[in-house]
Image (cartoon, rainbow, N blue to C red; front, side, top):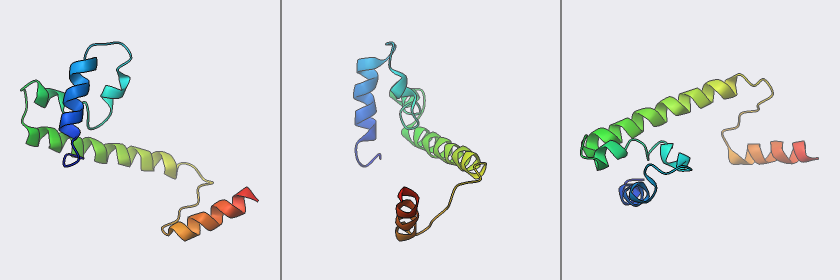
Length: 90
């Protein structure tokens, strides 16, 4: 994400929407962690560590939620998932 220009993207959005109503998208992981860096409060390295930590924590919460659903079929291979979807659609 960083190599693809995340910092530049966030910088532009932050300047444009900071403090404005309806800027809820700016609270997404990867955006909100960069704001303190853009304000000069933390280093880019620290912001990247925060992004990594928060992404991992979010993924763990998602997995916990999914595990609680008894009718989920897990597939590793896309072909198996496609076959299940085809069966379900019939």
